[in-house]
Every structure is written in structure tokens, then in C-alpha cells.
Picture 1 (cartoon, one colour):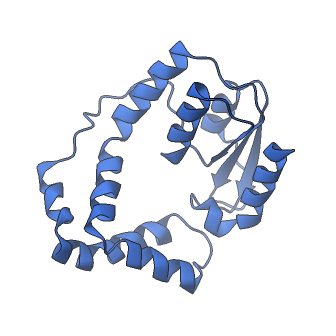
Picture 2 (picture 1 turned 120 degrees about the horizontal axis):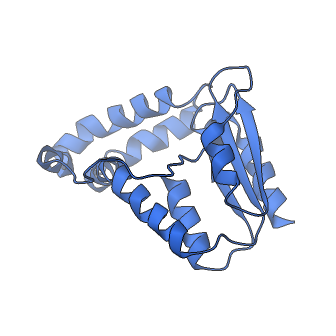
Picture 3 (picture 1 turned 60 degrees about the vertical axis):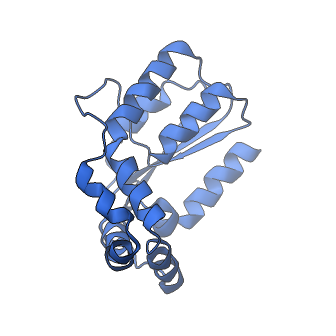
Length: 174
């Protein structure tokens, strides 16, 4: 979802470049409601977050990475997810995905894309390069966009391929 926020910001404010890391791309709204379910309030309790948060972080990180997560990164992630505000925010963001995309689609209709270099890093879990169809369609919206496919990489590109992230940032800084 961070790519949605970054794109929206770049459409509303001047930017010198934009790096979108394994972005989701929707070109039409979905039927999701975007409301956080009532049961999610229990996650905002310190005793619950203390127990569930680190497990939630670990499961999510393992499911979205294709390499070994460095011990220091895993430790910091689990510690941060002990905070009930972090857990509640992550759950709220998950359930607001459809609403956020609907807002971004509307913003795309009303604004022009930035005239700045855009690098889109597209993760492909398998070792063979696969066409990153959604990311290719997203790249067509930006006049100066480039898609870089990262075979054998999970959604957590910054963990699986930190060098690719650094290179993308350097490319838009030039």
C-alpha cells in the first residue's frame, strides 16, 4: 500500500523522482467495503498485541520474503509489533485497501502523473522472469517510467534485494 501513498503524493506535490517497490495496481474499484471489522478493536489492547503482534509480523515477513530475514531485522520487526498501535494500524490498513485504491483511481482521473523519473520494482517469486502485467500497466501511466523485474524475489524487496532498492533510488536521483 505504500506505493499507493507514494503515487498519490507525487500526483499532488512536485517530486524529483519516484521508486515504487512491488506496487499493487488496480485500474477499477472493487466491491470491498473498507471498514475495519469490530473484532479488530481487541488487537488494540496491549496484552493482546504483546502476544499476537510478533507472531503476525513473523508470519507476514516469512510469507512475503524469499531469503533469510536478518536476525536484527526480525528482532526489530517483532519488537515494533508488540505496540498495540502498530498492530491496530496494520490491520486497519489491510481492511482499507479497497477504499484506498478507489480513492487513488479517482485521483488518477483528476491529476496528471509527475514528469519525473519513475522506477517500478516488480517482484516475481519464481526464479524465471514473469511478465509483471499490473506493474507494466502502471508504468504506462508515467511518461518517464521503467519497470525492473526481480525474479526470485518476494514482496519484501528491501529484504530480498536491498541492492535493487538502492540502485532504483540512485537512478531517480541522477
